[in-house]
Image (cartoon, rainbow, N blue to C red; front, top):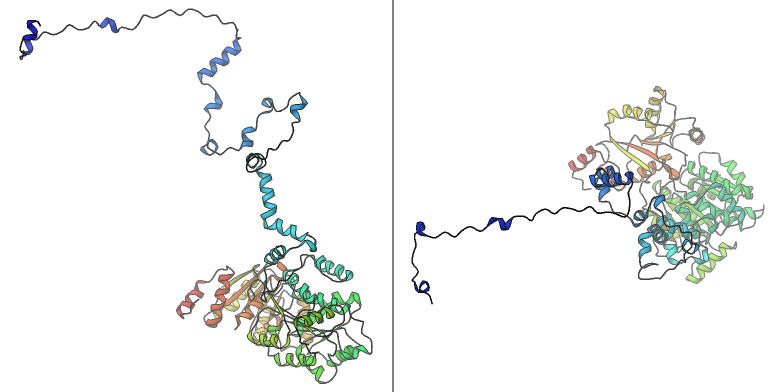
Length: 585
């Protein structure tokens, strides 16, 4: 080892230290520049091509500098959009026919016809096929065109749900899909098609049952075509029977229709004549308020069908001017109204004069119903049409109907959805002024409902002073006056009709634009029937009702519930009044 290595390390002051020399900076200098030798290209570019290349590298492309909206920039592109090309860039055509007409090969891989790609490339076809199976409208239209022998239980269920038909007896019914489904004679079918284009829900549900001569209870809103729903089976039943002669007419008519009011009976007679007259069937209307002698003479000459009010019919039966020995088809129209008017006693008496209902086993009853349908009746068939079903009416049905089917269309007792209900909080001293204002701002025809006969006369005088063409109708007027008033209103001779509840049931007046409840009725059922005078046959209508604190708490609470169910606006005053009186709604 050297001596330096044997030295002991010691501290050396900074000024005596030996500083090493700096490295040569020239070793880190960059390499000298090389001269670029010119390169010769085989291809030669013209000036236009060179200019295009320069423009590309300069970044002067206007399309690339345009601002794109985020919605356009990030939108989801479909494969069809990606495959779209310009005409000059289209390479799908080929001069070789083999490529222009390829074989349509479907490998059936995975989900779909082509590994699932068909769902992406052509989604409209997939949605269309799916829609035919699951879309409600397409399904209904497809079911309606099916032959009857190919209909299954699921098809009938879909039809019932679409028509909003409910059966309370848990029986499976097969409603009409179209008029051609009816088992009636060809002449009657052609006549019906000329009157109605398509059957209404109540007609679809009740006609097949009535044609089988089953007892029926049908509940539906007013203005839904209930009259033709029972007239069609009635006419078909009478056509199966021999025409009445002088001898057989002494045993009475073949069919009977009971109506609670004179006006409704006259209207039913008018509708019945549309179907009966072409077949030579005679229709007699027996109502009070008119002389009895012409009705007696008409009955003595023979009438296959009788339309009557219970009071006058009871008088004719009591005095032996009429018998019902061969009347095997009975209809009660607006049956709940008969109960409200206290006509249940007359109705029970009339049923006691009718042929009795034969009882027996289910097989025997079905056999008798088939005999009735074939034109050899041996027992009575009873149809009951109503808007509501009070308890008193239920007792009558249990007593006089046999094994009935109960059907309902939607929720009974409600106002039709196509009627707009406007509730106005108006004090009594402001009602007349408000009434004139509403009538002048509304389009005719208009029906004004009041609760008392004297109010009818007061409102008519008020409107006449305002030069509003009006007419009044109530139970205190003679029948001829009521008939003339109703006919004049139907012929648009009068723009406004003022009426009591006598006009709230069953009277069919076409195109009533507005109903005004000048006074709120005491029962909510009457409100429903009053409002039902507008919005008939699926047309729109307006119902305006004046209310205040003098109306009953209970009926106002029920009115509010109807407004909630029908999604109509509720006045703040009504809510405040009910809360103030601690009415729970």
